[in-house]
Length: 145
Image 1 (cartoon, rainbow, N blue to C red):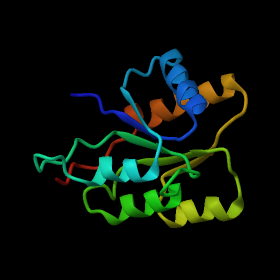
Image 2 (image 1 turned 90 degrees about the vertical axis):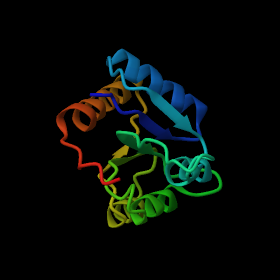
Image 3 (image 1 turned 90 degrees about the horizontal axis):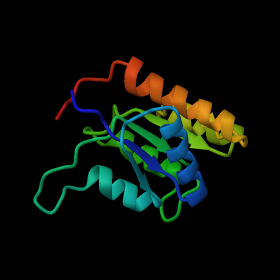
Image 4 (image 1 turned 180 degrees about the horizontal axis):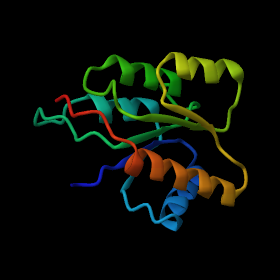
């Protein structure tokens, strides 16, 4: 069975590097793809390639809320509206814990909402637990393509 990629939609270069290091330290071997812009993320997930085929879906999306061009909640709304991606596991991983953003994320169908820990060790543990649960323990939905 081929391992699925992790798609990190995050505009902060430091957070991308921290996530990469935390995955490596936790021995999560899935490839990390980082996209720094909400529109580019939607183009990657929803738009067909020039040859007409759609890209393979990642096994997990880690989504920041505060993104350039298309905010994270709008990215989530579009993911859930598309029949090909509506079951894709999406975890909001953001610095915000505003109640209205947490509620909006769940209203739009996010699978989990995690506030980024400030401490690297705690952040690493959160990333390890995410990888363990979503990529190893969780039974993904059947591919509906």
